[in-house]
Image (cartoon, rainbow over all chains, first blue to last red; front, side, top):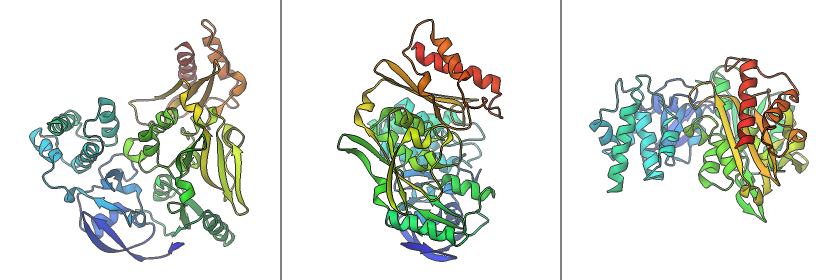
Length: 157
Length: 271
């Protein structure tokens, strides 16, 4: 049985690279990504699992990194916004100007990217369900939905 | 940031898990079983709980059983709500799980965590109350099986140190006509004013609900066949048979909740 007490060294696989980090068992993944690895794409928002600004992908599925312990993430593949390059969703967000202040953008892009990987042609109900995990305080939801629509159409061709 | 330190245990067997819980407890410390951990993390962050240790069940194979086994649908306590939704094995349970929190959180929240957590609504329990489901629980002296209605209806909880391992129910329940209606104060995400799961079995509509009282509840003696012209009266009867006053909180006044609850029951019976 694994037992961690006090600070421990663990390895996190982030964006395809193994990183040695020293954590308390009660350290959440969001803090470790930002404070130890300098990956500031995941944003602290509500830090209560509500807003989605801190979303990362864990084994391809969106997870709010404020409600995951860093020690839980060991052994899984973590993708932050820094790990995405030139994806159709990123291009669609630029084309549709799907951001205002930009604080929620990494979380939304990761949710949209995961959605298209898992459900390449999602129906409206699936889109609504996935996008409701994230909040844009600038209320730019329509352009975000438009960007996702563009990426879905591109997926179909 | 979680302002307290706790130890992290990841047992490989059920026995290791329950023994770890017992030993930590006997040392005068506070252990928590840890599935998805969403509630433990958020409550620790604001100081509502101060765990000394968490016992993560992710390495225990029995807690991750999922699928059909000898004519039974089996759902391990560690299975995430997303998996239950995406697989479609038991559509009513999928519907109920798909309305807990939001989609990303459902990928972290486990069935066991939702059933055993301290958040009062525990909506994934509702379909299980309707279907003669059984739970398997691990204790220091081994595994025990209980009917869900006996162990968890009307505010009942597992005993201190017991670990929910899995839930099983006959696969035929997945074929019955069902409803799941969740009504919230605003929008779609949020705690319910009321959530009602219902299922038609041999002409009788079984119903379980959350939000009206401070716990999930099924009142089996109130269940009946829908009858045009009588359904509003039946719905009123549910209100009169609640074991505690209708909840009143920031989500809604007792009067409003009562009205929503009654209409939701009538809506199902009339459909």
